[in-house]
Image 1 (cartoon, rainbow, N blue to C red):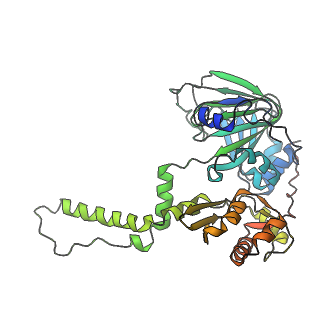
Image 2: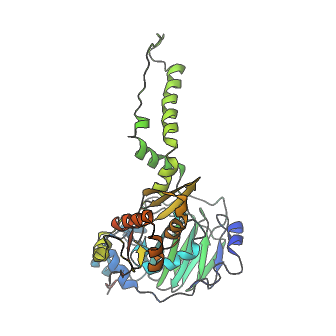
Length: 395
């Protein structure tokens, strides 16, 4: 499906010259497969499920109007003929065949890949000129979209007042292109861009995770705050008298720092494990997907069956000395390094061939691991097919 992904550039050249540095336009980057859905089915998905969907309308009740899903049919039938977009995140969890668009980008580690977002836009539909904090690959699936970017690192970041969307007030353009089906545009973080549909169109965005230090610290503290390492309380036996009760003495400050640092040091041995769990936490499963797949769940490994990773399930591992830490769906499994081939296979592949699974399951420890992953719904039988979300977007 993928052609020479970066044209005449090798993947390493792309990483050296463009990744997180400057944009890249690639014509005919993808030979597009036939899609199993259309605009009507996307609208149905936004109405019938808890898919993270939103509609952006320009010149609606206000200059830029944001509506959050789930939606009703009337939300679509009341839309104007032009200047609106439907966006759905995590679209690959509803249409797993779209994982073929993620596969070419797995030269970036899986934990860095966030999701696929699909945008269906009526003529002139847009989400306004804006900036993203993360890398993104924009793949044109259908129709034409015109993209404008501003490569000036000192761009005017002033945002319009009022809209829930962070739309740039004074956008500038240094380059612009029209993307046709199969074309791809890479944009590094913090680069102003604006995409406008030239007629009805559909665009797929491959977004990447870039957690901030603040986000990591906050999530870490939320998890470890109740652990034994952080239950040590301040104590001051044999305290000396001080002249002013309003003073926080250097001795007290030192002791407060000590108990904080002691807690961090005691828990730091588990920091790598916490990061593995955090980076592989599953996206919130949609009840509609769980219900649709419930009949396909196996209670244990079945000989001769092929399996797949449950949509949205993340898997990764770390290797330290003779120990493997496998992380699947936010849970950790410790394994001896002799199981590295099985672990690499589980993390690299999204679909698991019956013969490979059977071979690995000759080992009792791996068989127990596979059974656990099946029981946790991290791995399911290959018989699943996407649900039917067919619904007319508007009349």
